[in-house]
Image (tube, rainbow, N blue to C red; front, side, top):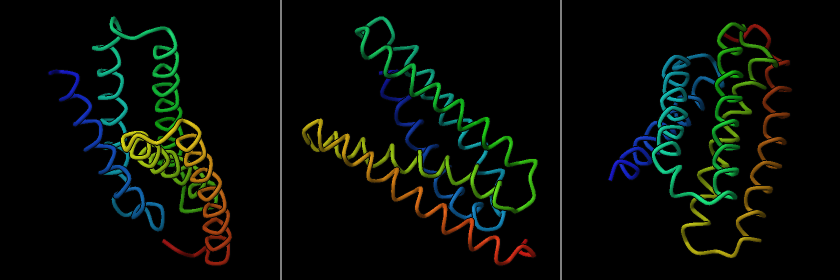
Length: 149
């Protein structure tokens, strides 16, 4: 029961971080909502993993440990972005976390519909590539308008 509640809270706060981050990415509006939603999402993920730890096999433990580590990297990038003006570096840091959040939503959705592992992996890789291309475009656009908020 606790695991399901923690996963639901993780998904809810992850969605809030994604939505607020999309707004913050373009102009720092809702940045604090994005940051604290991201903190909550990673915290709920870590709590869910800890709660389930005794029932996980070694491969699952390694995988979920990697997810929590990625979450901590995302928090570090978001905290670094907090100290930056709107700039290509800011766009890059926030953008990385947005790509990671969106990628997670896509991969979980593909996994939950029962797709084969190859399709799950392919969807994750394609989202990451598309996100990288999108971030390059966003940074180029930001460089063209450095006076933006």
